[in-house]
Amino acid sequence: MLHLVIAEAELELVPRTIRDHPAVVNYAKRRGKRPDEVLLDSTYHHAALKKLSDGERRGRPDIVHICLLNALESIANKEGKLRVYVHTRNDEVIYIKPETRIPRNYNRFVGLMESLFRDRAVPKNLELLRMEEKSLVELVEEINPDEIFVMHEDGNAVKPSEFGKILSGLRNPVVIVGGFPHGDFRSETPWERISLYDAPLMAWTVVNEVIISFEHWIF
Amino acid sequence: MLHLVIAEAELELVPRTIRDHPAVVNYAKRRGKRPDEVLLDSTYHHAALKKLSDGERRGRPDIVHICLLNALESIANKEGKLRVYVHTRNDEVIYIKPETRIPRNYNRFVGLMESLFRDRAVPKNLELLRMEEKSLVELVEEINPDEIFVMHEDGNAVKPSEFGKILSGLRNPVVIVGGFPHGDFRSETPWERISLYDAPLMAWTVVNEVIISFEHWIF
Image (cartoon, rainbow over all chains, first blue to last red; front, side, top):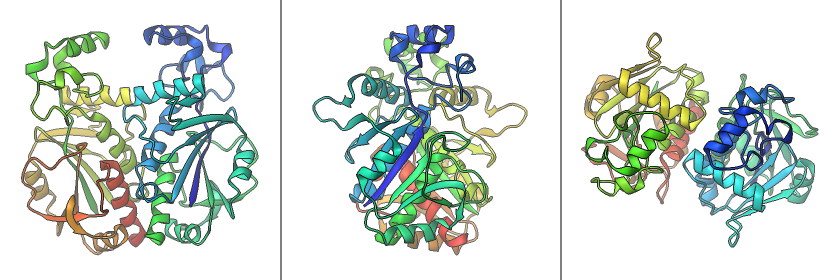
């Protein structure tokens, strides 16, 4: 089973310090919600983000959305060989049941994530998505993998196909992909670093490369 | 060079016959546009779509968006080995320059497509995206490929990795992926049919499988 972690994902509710910023207030009003109920989104809160530390990389639910659509609709997931987790910048972990059908529409996905932050599980009866406070290290320990890899621009260069072969030979590998637009992990990732390409790749590109290269060796 | 065609994509402006439907009128007003300027979108025009033929599959710009984000951010595209085209249900073809950075945000993507339908090229100076009236057969003839494959549930079963090998041995293959949510191609696709998996796959999953399997044999 391949365990894929989208780590330090830029997924959070609007932080308290900018909830009274006009960009946030107007956005929330337009959506019929309170400022403390809406996801931070760089497309709409650009002006407010300038007032936050790391503002240039925060508010990217779109990255999580695309990674999840790709991972959950992959052949590996349909074959029961994949588990997907989202770890956020604020050390929350989202557990996702493999049969989950993530909304295709971005705005619906945002609404779903807002419900998840409020209720900690959605839908309440099925709990297809469940959120817990947990660090990346704690999540990795809980998975209890035989190997842990961090996908990283400065990692050891390994061709995607070769990396897939390595993964296919393991029992329970964890692969960590940064869920942020650019820059480095902010917290410790004391594991083997792997680079699939000699230039930066989008998070969802790495997700696709890892999953499909893994599939090639097991199906 | 691999030529990837997202074909019969469910991408269109709101058709004339439902432009006065309340679901459309309210949606356009909310976005500050006229009903004839906005994309058909099943998330928002559900009630109006019931009045259209094929209404249950139309209005899916999200499928095009995800396919393009995956294809254009792929290693194959960065290496100059990929060309991507979108062919719509109304026989328009969108030509996309490989260096195009598609908006990550869905709502911005929708705005960009609306500009494209209006102006036939965006941005006007660079023409990263350009739209022409053209059928799928005409597009394929223009590409002048050595082989043409249609990805299809009922096609010949070929493993993704094997299919990648076949593609890598050709000079200018065309691979056609249906840009609709379910059902069959509506028009003639008189080419070899290939099935990568024994159950239906999302369009973007097929796009990922084709591109990455192709990459494995050329890099």
